[in-house]
Length: 351
Image 1 (cartoon, rainbow, N blue to C red):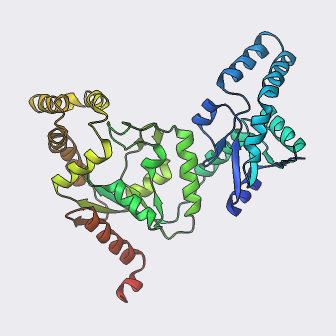
Image 2: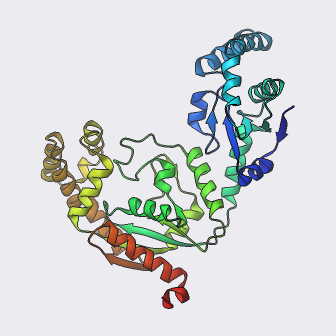
Image 3: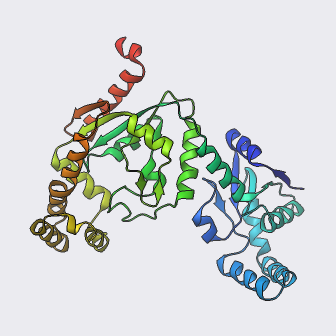
């Protein structure tokens, strides 16, 4: 038989590793939010789920169950095979830990495939995420990577992440780059997905003496940063990166690939066009339509983003350290040295 587990037991299994989480809800439900790292092996696809729901409302619960059984019977061999190919321990769940996960677990147990079933399903998991974030006590010091648009802040964080520094990649969690152009080429995450990914990393770095994150607005795309983390960012030590304009333009072109996303870039530009001096805005638009993206980015930085950034810097009163760098490699090296010196001063002095 299968074994029912609660959220605490689920987290214990997750910490031990060697377990696969399987969401048996429909693809659209899975896309909306899930437990990070889960697979989707749906008992019903979106059309089948809608059909069963209609039968339930218009006919009866029994008619809906009969239709569901008919659908499951036709796909049963492939469904069981998909689970049988997963060698690790398996945890299944649906929306409320109800009919779909129970049906799945029962069928698999009959085929001698043992699984754990999450009581309360994704709804219980979501409640745990919200409750935990609401009461989260962030004790780590925060270093904030800051700098003009195009300074390679996200790229630098990702480099630090690869080197196993405790990085919170908030833009990655939101699947948004944090500007009016930030959604281009990405499928942005909603608040539920953002918070699940955020909590996962917060708990992973729970005992770290410091955290690294990028200077972000309160909102990143569809996601809003929790107040405790936003305040930690505001009060953190700001590490400002100054790069030459040519490097910044290069980074933006590499990140956004406007030659492949031309229409989306032009559409996004319309949202800020009125904020830019009319002749300059017309010049930027002309460059975008004419595929002269370097020129367009240069003017956007000079006449829109840099003045806004300058204003933010002038109003900033907290602790900050500025790095004048030729490129991202130099910036990465200087930031690493500074972080190590700030966090472990005695070790740095002994070098």
